[in-house]
Length: 213
Image (cartoon, rainbow, N blue to C red; front, side, top):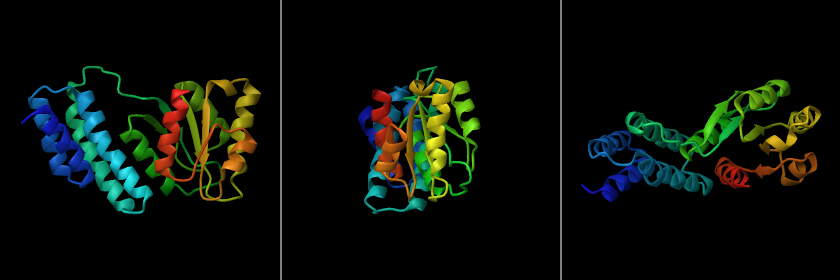
């Protein structure tokens, strides 16, 4: 089987939520000593990009994303031993739900799609104090800080992240992206954020653009 056929099988297995197919394709890639980064970029990640687009169009739902993510991760575990230190990460991103907000389903979907797109993700969970977020961003040297707010009462937590970075004199070191059901582009612009996304799939595209700047 050719390289192109194996990579296409990887992509197809992720799209079709086929965990066993993804593992088998990854094992074939290892057996033929294929470039693991190419397999990930053109196979597994490409498949997750299709899943992301389908989710955005409401053609699939959260359970489908989770199964596709499992297929992606199963294949990744097989490819990791042959990666030989190649740099896969397209950037480092913090995800969290702002202080006072315990809703995290959207944040979790966003995390999955970011990882599948090649980002290194630090998930700080939900109801996270601003100071902890900023401390972690500095400690890890992240590229992007993201924070979701699912209630109007917790939206000010996003503004406080910007204010906290400015108080420390490090605002220019990080791109800040925000989202959540009540959040709007107008709000993000008002508080001085760098990016806004109204869904997880859009968030990945915005993250890519912010990293490129």
